[in-house]
Length: 405
Image (cartoon, rainbow, N blue to C red; front, side):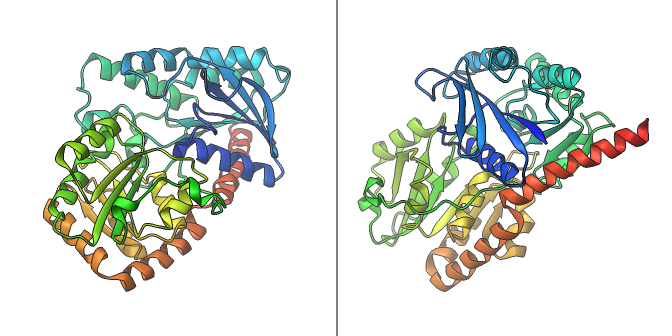
């Protein structure tokens, strides 16, 4: 099949969504399909134009920046994004291509007009990879109220759902939440997150210095640091465990809270907590090889459910996880059932410290959980599984369409 994959991020961007779309595109190509990735690029990012990257075509279209900018500027940029991408596709050498299927990744929620236009033009089926239930998570985290702006975002969200023949949510608990806003004709299924193994790079000397945490059992957080993660809970945990000179905490990444957290660490003079900027994803496995426990952080106020991509990164690296998540999140059951770490549902600082202490004090436990995590990643969270599931959905959609006639 000739497939169009649309997203708002792709390598060289380093965030999990970019890596997921790269791995998915490559897995689809391995299956014999012919994917084109349509993605925006801003100034100082990758050069616009059509490129062949390994076995995948990538069309980068110059567009306003949507990452690391203010909320108003980001909303405006995402609002015009579908039209910018459509224009870029029309002006490219591929403007005459016919698509057998369209796959798009959310966030962002604003790509609905692009999908609707191409779906009508080519009569093809569509698949929405839904990783983020915005704007509801923003209300849960206290970032937004259920006022006029919220209702406007809900209109955009529901319009996106109406363009999907199949919606792939990342956890079973999200299915009923999405079904409330999705059209009855949309097919709902669970599409687990995925991540390809990344080889350890030879240039280990490029890693940031961890001398401040030398000799400690290191709890590492690698990913976006924003309001949705509520990283202050782990700052408080580091504060509680200051008296232990055998335990350290490492935060690696970007996001709206990263600068504030770094300033907080400097102001309070933490000796057991280090905050560093985002690093190249190819270097991340080598960094994680120096760490012992992976941190999963989700704001306890969330009512939507999320299995972050960083969980897969830790599992691939053989790290057990310490997860602080919203109550009823699917990780509350998955983590203990698969024996891949310790989980704290809701806001319970005492339990978080007890679970951290348990992991810090028992290297045999960490090793066992790490091995279980590697096995789980191979079984449930592979790009090949995701690619096969998405490709199969187009065949199912065609059968349903035939019978409806």
